[in-house]
Image (cartoon, rainbow, N blue to C red):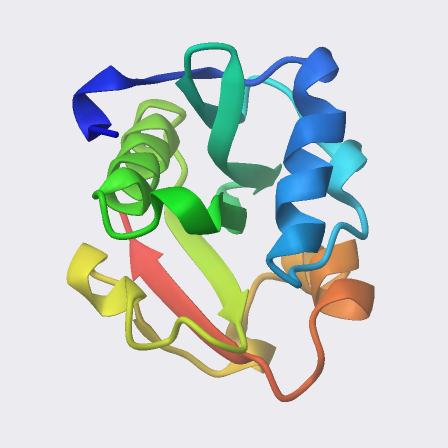
Length: 148
């Protein structure tokens, strides 16, 4: 099992069930996943198996990084790093000004990409109205932001 066998590609509608299953297996929320699922998400593929995913929802000039997941079997192989770098490059190409995320477990992971803790109430109004902010993540989740 080597990460050299992993490819990243834009997600398509047919990937939604596999990504939902990965998220549920990891105990992560799927609320609202289908709202913007598609090319703003990337999947990590080994053979025919989706083993990781990550997406950025667009909310005006801001993005919301969500659904960052790697199959437990593949964790520790740098796949999460590749997924996050891919999505941040995508966000920059899309001319987003900032990317936010909410996390209950990974607040120590994301600073390596330039994210820093932020006050949830400072997020743009359109982000605060997203299902991730209103339903999927508890009010106790750590908010983080990176300026692009």
